[in-house]
Amino acid sequence: MTVTIVGSQLGDEGKGGIVDLYGDDVDVVARYQGGDNAGHTVVHEGEEYKLSLVPSGAIRGKVGVLGNGCVVNPRTLFDEIDTLQDRGLDPDVRIAERAHVILPFHRVLDGIEEEVKSESDQEVGTTGRGIGPTYEDKAGRRGVRVGDLLDPDVLRERLEYVVPQKRAVVEDVYGLDVDDLEDPDALDVDALFEEFRDFGRRFEAEDMTVNAGAFLSAAIDEGQNVMLEGAQGTIIDIDHGNYPYVTSSNPTAGGAATGTGLSPGVVGGGEIIGIVKAYLTRVGSGPLPTELGGVVGDTPGYDEQGEGENEELANYIREEGGEYGTVTGRPRRVGWLDLPMLRHSTRVSGFTGIAINHLDVLAGLDEVKVGHTYTLDGEELASMPATTEQWARCEANVRSFDGWPEADWQAVADEGYDALPENAKAYVEYIEDELDTPAYAIGVGPGRGETIVREQPF
Ligand code: IMP
Image (cartoon, rainbow, N blue to C red; front, side, top):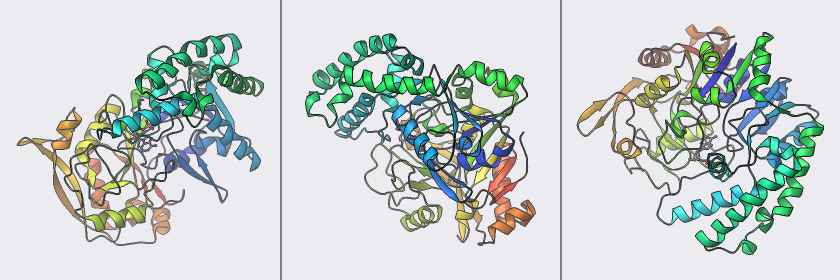
């Protein structure tokens, strides 16, 4: 069977921890979208590993698959694999032949477009990893796929079409000189061909490429357990998120089917677990109706409501929760839990269960608030409106909960749900009731063992 893990908010909900928690019963972990914009830290046998592309399960001896919905930067991938091998591990990573390749010029274009947009305060605040430009080329039918790296003639043909076009964009649209770029080879057909042909040889030599849908279906037919791991979160989904402040793929559960080649029936026949952080964080631009203020730096493109208010509280939560980006190190914006957002995410992905993380971070506060509904133009809304401009005008109608004290969280995790402080239980039960979805797991600390496990999905 499959278990699909989906971020229900803006990414950074602690998906990796839940993948890890249920990982013992898993044979194969497959990512279905995104690329090296994601980041997770895995602690295994006392060693810490920071990864952005290699699925965390691969560190624990599982097969890790990057599905066709992913965009793969082979430089990052092989850096991570080499580092893991240097540290004595032998990760088994398979890459979909249909996945698209992030080429060096995609990063260059990501940077240039953000720079140009910033002149009119329209930048997205991307991770700068070339994600958007790679998906653009995929949709534009001019991308290079992993399978193309294995065939030199096809690779050269693709590069000879796409590279002159990108050079023209850099020079004629943006008015820049390619030779003045930090890495002019990023737009040189011969240099790209040599480097990426070598990556292709390595993929071939290590037998790393697969037809992902066929590979995963065969694993399921053999009775293996497959976990489908989304990166990022629902509100930065390109279709269901707050466009244009989104990533360029589908972190929601539908993406698990299109991004792996498993059918919607297979994905929907399994469990779909929404990962919920007990409060909100956001990196990058865009609205956040329950924002606590304390915004660090310039965050254009969102309503200024809340900025500066409750700054101390935001800073407290940011420090307690270690809310700094894994990939970029950027401080994250902080807000209260937003129920209209979660109702939207639950509907879009059809969560069969949720996991609530970081409940311990809120311990010690006198009062914990949530955005229960919104008011937009005098009307009460239970879910998010479809446009970002409307969302930015939403005012959160806040509900207040009595806070809960600090506890020995390891002991709470060991004893189980009943050991949670009463007020924390009231908070969890409110979320379960509002989403009509049971909490399968509750994270009360960063360690793998600091989780109350109420349900084993496999
Ligand atoms: P991109 O995915 O680099 O194009 O960035 C687009 C938007 O998604 C930006 O607001 C990023 O901050 C956000 N984003 C991308 N990856 C992550 C992630 O792993 N966690 C949180 N936000 C992310």
